[in-house]
Length: 268
Image (cartoon, rainbow, N blue to C red; front, side):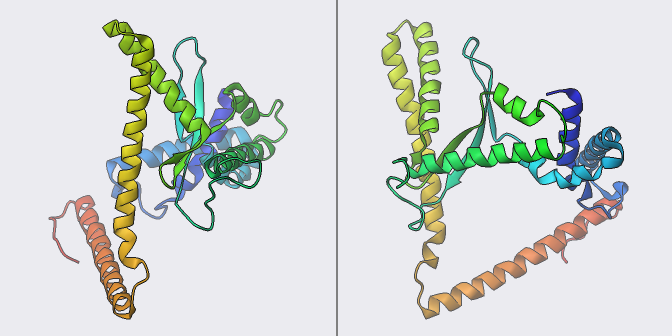
């Protein structure tokens, strides 16, 4: 992407970040917050300088610009191509949305969700080409995505189910690891490859099932509660909200005292 187009894209993505805590002076912000605000301000100013009187396009394109940030970028090995951009999505096990096979085209539900994710990303790119980059030929976002081979989606959810692209990526990673280990150990490359692919799948499955189990454990008490349980849950939620509000006020007070150079006083 041309430098000018990249500047506009960074500026559009930084508009909302610049307005966070807009009423707070720089002197009252922490070091990280000041650096983030300075970077956002510089990005917006550079973009506005390019747009001139048409700077309102930055705000209109803020959502699409933020959405174009890649969830995952992988650099392929030398000779296997360049950077690959992935959109990563998860889905919960839901009776109303889950099917072993989608009725349309016979694809799995994960593949259908992946197709929708890719379309969402391409639609965002088209909005930027028609709005922020209006009149630029060839369209910058479409050109960049085409150069990268398009957007691919990785979908995981339900009972440790992956879409086709995710399975292909696992095989590709395992094959690379197997080839490396075979070269190091001198063992048969086919055995090393099969072993590494299996290991990658096991590690991924263990983590997915661990997260799934933690989710079930956290939500099981809310499943079909009786009257007493509903009352208890409501009281616990009210208490948790009060504690969260007090913690937020305490954090704000401590941050304010620190900025003012005053002694730390705990409590509300």
